[in-house]
Length: 79
Image (cartoon, rainbow, N blue to C red; front, side, top):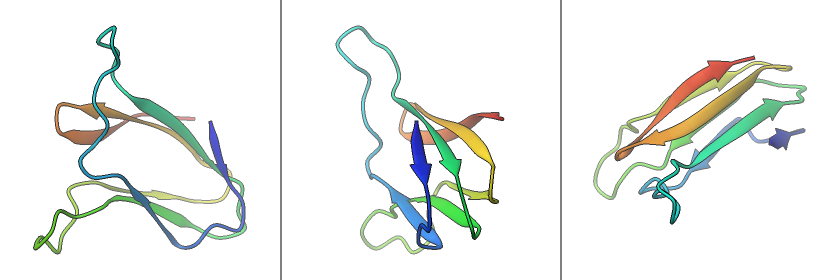
């Protein structure tokens, strides 16, 4: 669980996305926005590409689970 408190308006996820572990488990992270402002999670765009492949807006008190599926991120659960 990563908790964001007074976070900047934009938080970048790594590119390329993390790979599976030695047991084949996909990488995931739960992110909670503790506020006080909205935060956007965004995949860092590859060089030369201005538009990210993944973005999700978190309002204060929102929690999301983000996981990797192949070469992209997905939101799999909102709490």
